[in-house]
Amino acid sequence: MASENANQLIRTVSVERLGVRGEGIAQTSAGPLYIPYALPGEEIRVHVDGERGELVEVLKPSPDRIEAFCPLYMRCGGCAVQALAKPAYESWKRELVVTALRHAGIETTVGPLLDAHGAGRRRLAFHARVTRDALGRLTALTGFMRARSHEIVAIAQCPVFDPAMAAAPAAAQAIAQAMTSMEKPLDIWITALDEGLDVDIHGSGEPSENIRRALIDMAAKLDLVRLSIHGVPLIVNRPPRLTVGPALVEPPPGAFLQATRAGEHMLANLVLEHAGKARRIADLFAGIGTFTHPLAQRAQVHAVEFGKPAVEALQHSANRTTGAKPVTSQARDLYRRPLDPGELARFDAVVFDPPRAGAEAQARELGKSIVPRIVAVSCNAQTFARDARILLDGGYRLEGVTPVDQFRHSPHVELVAAFARPKAAASRRRLLG
Image (cartoon, rainbow, N blue to C red; front, side, top):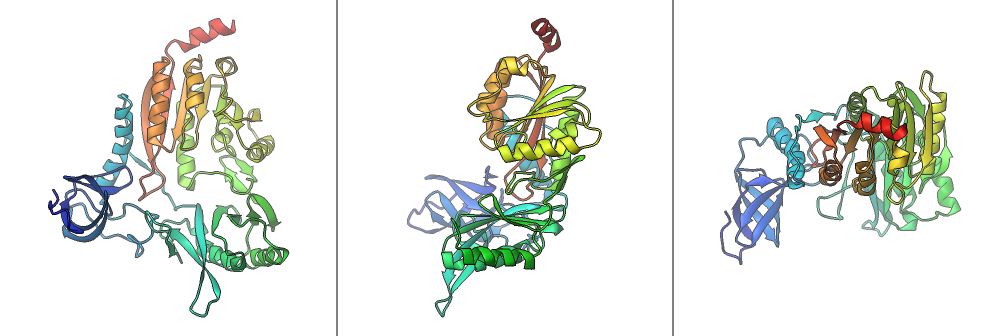
């Protein structure tokens, strides 16, 4: 418990648990205090600012505290939990899923946390801000943001990167420096494709012709596969290809893909396992075909995604993939126009992998459908629990949940879950005649 002298800015507290953001939580007379980088069971000195605290000193460390492996830990906001021993870390991360389900009134089997970090992250956003040096010259500061701050921490390398991203920090810095005259904050998305780095710049507005020429020259010097501005290619030096399961896809600039190669493979394998022997599958929020392409090796797949460029890339690659079953696709906003029960009735299984906001509207239509099997993939345990509750209330049975750790050292956790509708096959035969 905290010392109760409210006038003290530096206080001594005992940390009780880790929160959903990876912050240590201490209870005080004023309510919970959230302290980044503090661990359960520790006695610490902390600088208090409202309900937030800044760790000053660890007086009594947790027996689960280990040495952080990155020298920028506690400065860079990219990793929330590096100093927690593996067993305690895995227990905490799995518990994030268990707690979200419990709050939604859902009891089910939650498997052990699966590690899908693999070689590391292959897609990241670098933030860039323009400052002036001591001589008044414009210069770019590029890196990641400090936790709970807009302050940028310069990054030269990062131990959680895929080796294919080794040149990414220098590339982001060079690009930002070439654009300093615009004096605008930038977000520079960099993705490791099969043949090199793909860059998409956001926040710049329309650059001048001089800056465009400088960026084209920079893309050649950096040997970039492609350089785009707000999703519009500025220069393509070679085909921007990415292997997705059995397919070779040319993703549009800034396309969503799983953060690690190992994560993509693990999630796809879990989806395939849960889809079972289904022969007609709808893949909703399909992106560029992370699950469509593996599923099409054994079933007909109808892929639905909001972005037309992603749908076109998916369909084009599916048409060229040897041995694949027929794939159809549709560009459609599933938040505004979810597939209804009539449209869903022709499928043996539905896979859905929505953004962090979840898929509430689509879950309501699924809950009224006769689809025998549903496989849900989620990057947000809270919105998944909400959508799962809708499916359960619609008569589905939740067979189990598998948490997947693709974003190691962060509070983000992926999961895959399987739902079945009891006696759905008989109902489906009656409806379809």
